[in-house]
Length: 177
Image (cartoon, rainbow, N blue to C red; front, top):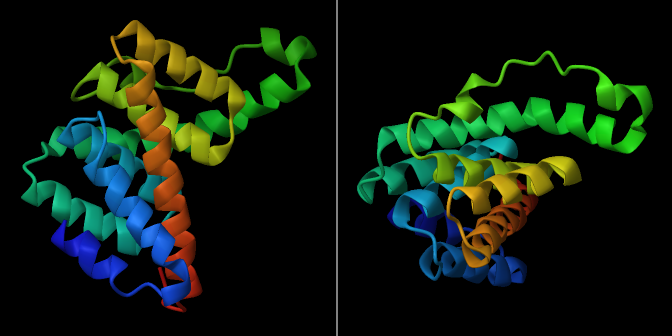
């Protein structure tokens, strides 16, 4: 975690909890190394945080994470940016909108480059950050269907939460992100 640790070392003192929390959720988790870095990457891309995206990419590569895993994380972030808007609307408004076809292409969700379970974790992390209840429920259920347990699903959201807090702390530092 050299690149991430170097970035965390630049956080202001009043955000020390966030540096601790991010390091902890990335280090102490039921997620395997690809899942943890993929959740971190999906979260950083969802937040459009270039500093974290670059640090996570560097550290994931150093940890031997497959490029397909990081591609899936990036794809999950992009697809959830679209889906979370649409399905949050449908879930909120309901009525006849619930019966209309989405008409949005999402082939990568059905056929990720890497693991389906990993993709569900990445989509769940992005959906949690985007606040889409319908998508969180969907990806939590799909994750369980492909063998993930509650702790793994929970850890994906913990990673997303810690990345979000760290992103805000980096922004508060005054540097462009």
